[in-house]
Image 1 (tube, rainbow, N blue to C red):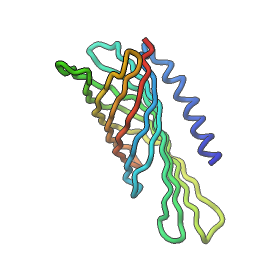
Image 2: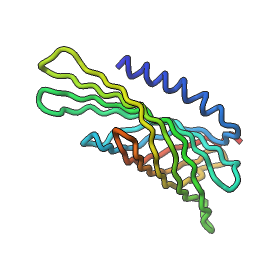
Image 3: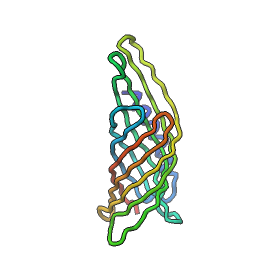
Image 4: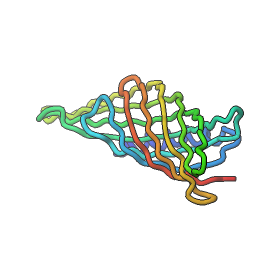
Length: 180
């Protein structure tokens, strides 16, 4: 658990300056969701941070994000696998305004960097093997922004990522606070 906290703090320390390095951030928030990877049998709970930069021409919105999830599962009766992932990335999305609707659908894609940590512990051995791997990812996103009031926007997003060791599909619900 301590190594998870250390890795999360390191990723946060790297991502926050990256978020603030983007001029024109108009909103910041958080999200949670469910992720299914190619490595695991079950869905994992995901949490993360996000931002929006929407003063670009042509009308594109940049969305830097930081996601985290982990899963523990038994490979067989004597081995237990622990796997976690930190994802830091940037999506470019194109919003589509609908007539007579406040909801704004969008579609886009982007690049990401992933830190995967996997460990295997065995009932036959007191030691645990830890492996770390960095991967680059390509992803596609579709979603819907829902204005809640003048300062808050909710959103629903689906993402599919080709991510090296663990491709994944996920769905997120989130909220962003408008800074301007």
